[in-house]
Length: 306
Image 1: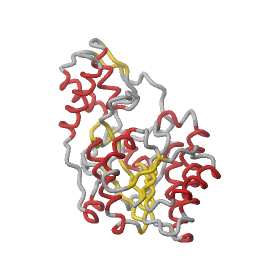
Image 2: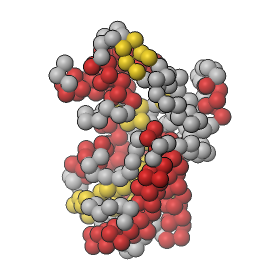
Image 3: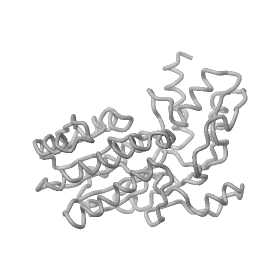
Image 4: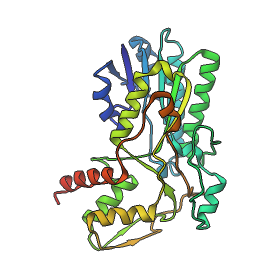
């Protein structure tokens, strides 16, 4: 079977491709995804059985400052791909990388902001009403709605994964986990971070890859428009997360909080579970947060020669 992969040079794509290649003849999208005719001609020349769409700008914070670019790449680019995919006669599935960020603002977020301990809050799942609150998240949710339209009106099979914060990068320290780790390794005395109070859940790259591979291989069980949240239900406050990393590094310095520009309408609670994908496909994350952080720290120590 032929599989078309977009975003194959990204964090997930570069690690997922070798797994997919074990079972599929993998093609990589070479066209600029925002150029409809280029995408149309290339995809139809391949006639893939499955499309795995990872290509996107993913830096949520940056989307507040590059709104148009994020909309063009993440939404318009995806529409280009969906419209072309709908013309493939025997397409088995279109697997789309969505995000937990689509949940955005929820009433409980305000409660967390007031420092009410969220022990009674349930994790978001596929039935939680989305309220995207960032240009990145809005574009991703719009893609989900377009997929629903294409499924209903054009017969396009699809699955979407609303994945949570993934970590384990070895070549990018922009994202929160890697940023905290690398700053602490490089700076023994003090580091600068943003908000301390939001809660997030995190998933290690190996679990994400296993989740994606499971969905792709079991296309016939989830290509009816299934949307899966994939995240361990273990939220942690960013302040506590930084302290946990500090303890693993035996870092004794000072954290200067609130040193970055405020995000408009910061979301203070994002957490999800994996119940539906476990019930449907038998998948669940295997790597604990502690073990995943140990692996990530070890990688960056080696990279930074410490």
